[in-house]
Length: 283
Length: 177
Figure 1: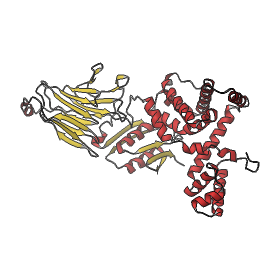
Figure 2: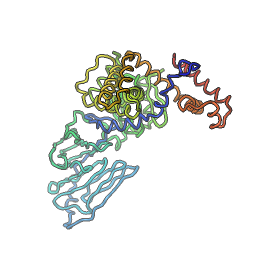
Figure 3: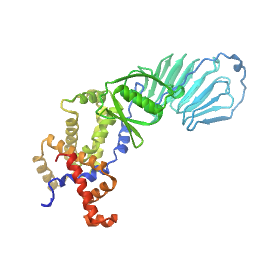
Figure 4: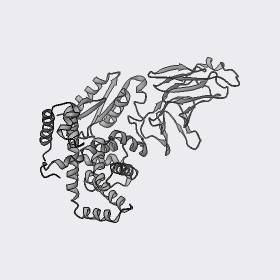
């Protein structure tokens, strides 16, 4: 160290190293190495909630043709939700960035589809022809006459299924894990196998209904769900205590008013930084 | 132990992604630079800290922390650095140097304080107005003279000097040296 330098100067020697570190990038590496498993609903966790509603319109069932090899149809949603009807009259709503592949005409013995991404199913009841969805090349959902949701997670490491009505058999493709789910039950197929989820997320279908419902939910869970619902990154500053709880129902509210409400009720502040929202303590 | 520490440790034990993410974003930079001071290489330092976080998650069920979370992290990084060095093929001369460095090693508290200071400096510099930050970086990080900076940025030497002194003023204000 040069004698004429201020005594503080040596403290700048590592500044360059700090500047060269890309924390965001390296966090992604660590996150994928860890492979976080989630049991409860959290924002970054995709769950496919397909509500399959029993439609007792028998008329559709009569229309089935014997075709040796049907044409396969592929439907993709892009930045929008997309609704379509299947050859048997069943209805599907695809969430954004999803794809559904199905035959032009269903086989008489079974109705088979392939899904990538998140979707919502309303299945026409036909006990003689089970309705089966293969999800993300990992799992299979067999409809036993119900409403269900299917959702793979963002990193495609697992698939979750939640049942709104009826019964669903949810299994891995290799058939090693299978679970039967009934109304208001949910399970996740991940790297550790099939796990029944302890709590069912009320906001599973928020992407479809536009409603967010919170009841004594912790601030982290609340912000995670808002984050997922509006597609914007929300950061909770470390100085904010985590044991604060929020109760409210928000019906198709815009993001600003949701953030304002949370801030006001919990005594917090938020600001925008780059493309993120940051919540801090009130000053 | 601070209350926020308790909360974080609970989050770590439960495997909550948001807790790990928060901890990582707070400590990754200073811990990596700290590790680098032992390993003489920033890449190795970063990898070591990343491995520490993965390990934290894997052993989360049996996690026991009696000091503060911060001390625990710095201690862990230091231990891993020392292990790493022990297992390396090191020239005898270099090894002797290392030994003497450790004999006069500061207490963990001093080390942490120094590291936090450097982290603060980084954060304050990040918040400087763009040109001021650029000039300061060119001076203190890239080691350019005021004249060289003035030339490269097409500014007067006076401007460069003023900007640097402004930066130092802000730093002295925000950080009690």
